[in-house]
Length: 433
Image (cartoon, rainbow, N blue to C red; front, side, top):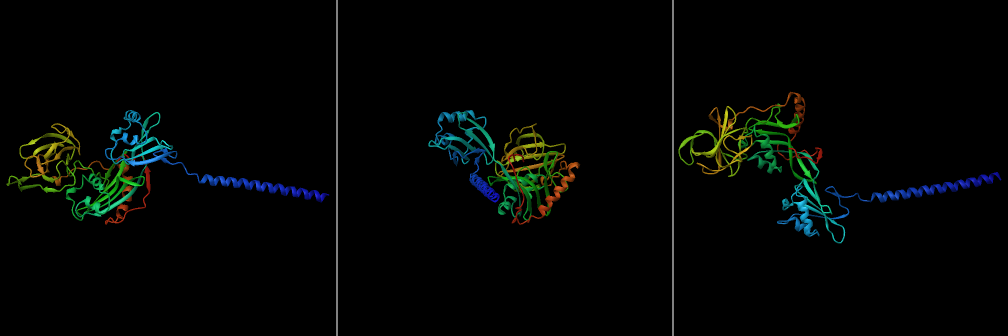
């Protein structure tokens, strides 16, 4: 009897255990099945920060002579709504500034009407404006995330820096950046065959597409056999470029008052005048340039005069920079905004535009420099440096300099290779330069 009771108890325990096993197994199976179902559910999709899964998406470019009204009318937005949109959102972005070739996106209702609910217009590769076409029409500005990758460029110059960059497949806009950085230390009119460059710079990407270059971080120009380094460094929340001895690359004067043109006539005490056909001194430098090329002041100063020069200089501007130096700009086609006697000008400010006024055979700038009222060769002008790196930051500067020097040293001059393993940093507010 006792054995029978024990047997019954064991059988009952086995039944209960089996029930628990199958219950737990079924629960885990259902849970796993639910997990698999959850895993195949796609995450919500966003464009310009808007969830778009419940919309039909149309992406296109603004066509030639196409206005916002034409775009929206095709997607069932009526004229009164378009008029309200244009008036109500003008303070955010004026729809009259919509330009041919720019991208736009429409989010349409996912029904038989397919009416436009949102209109997104790309003002630039980075900036865009979102128009909400709901009951309360409004607009807001946005910006795409910008990815920054550090890249390099290098090469040997055969004709010009711009041509060398293009020939090596580098961004030619680096020519402008380098000319700004080295404006005080290298005369780009004197670039010669065999000069070379190495640059470490930021390249900016939006949606994986290159939208241009950012800041140059380090560079070396080998000019007339001499290495001239430039390193970007921030001190006291201000960034600037310094040489390998922590001296500023800025000078009191620019090396030239206009960019990327050749010298057609140099400083001499005896030159055959092309029009008068007599020999006389030419106490300046002629820069051949296209008509209308901006001419800038090489330094801060006060305009002595902006008037016609009866000696053959045509429209001319004279600027007094300090007690020692004065500069003269001649043969201008017209004067820069606000340029008149007594006006104060800043370094790099436009004082006029290249022309051929006065005695000139073609458009060019006759540029002259006077030191203590004596004409001096502008190409040999020496000027004192700006402030160097502060003592408190010098240790940090030299550490960064040494890092960039190693990088520049490892860049081949041929320009055939590039550093491709640098980290990518993302930032949505890369507006400073």
